[in-house]
Image (cartoon, rainbow, N blue to C red):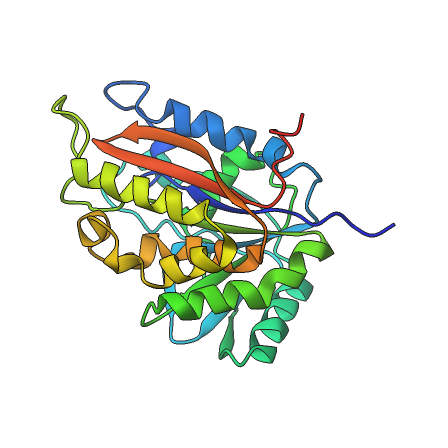
Length: 275
């Protein structure tokens, strides 16, 4: 019996270690945290490993963390001392890392391997909720410096065979990421975040060919640069979408936090929706 084809995901990873500290109001991040805990139910079959593309790692070539026991990288500043003592003793997957490189290189994409960098907060913070027992190995893959959307879609397409090999592909970013506009007041949502989220959801849920065209030219969208002055938090979505092939995309979560709308997307079969 062949292995089931896993979906791909784009998840919001929050703000720094936001899920593991106090906020005012106290429930600021509760809905997002609860949704992240539910991710395994959306995925269905338990993956053998996860490949995570985080917004917080850019390299000259697509670079994989090939360590068997990756450390953590506390790449955030100004948060409570206890957030720099968070642990997540997850194993790496060197064989999967090698497979990632082979697939990318077969598609003509330059790759490299990293053997010292830790998993950054775009990985270990959400996965402390998704797989709290740290019992599913993780390989982190970088963005490629230059942030070419078409190139990140191509990287996703190259990685698509992993979905049939028990490997879950996850893009970790934020669907809206304008640090200067995040706020705690009650003045309502940033209208640019609403406009961009409406466009992004329509693009993701459209036919696959139209989806790729739209995402390749995402900066032509309404309020695109207001939502993403720099696109590093969006491009993990492109990898997840590229790996989806012709599979449909759907928005599986949306939240209103720090005056912005934040959404998560799944491509392929949503096991939770099928229950």
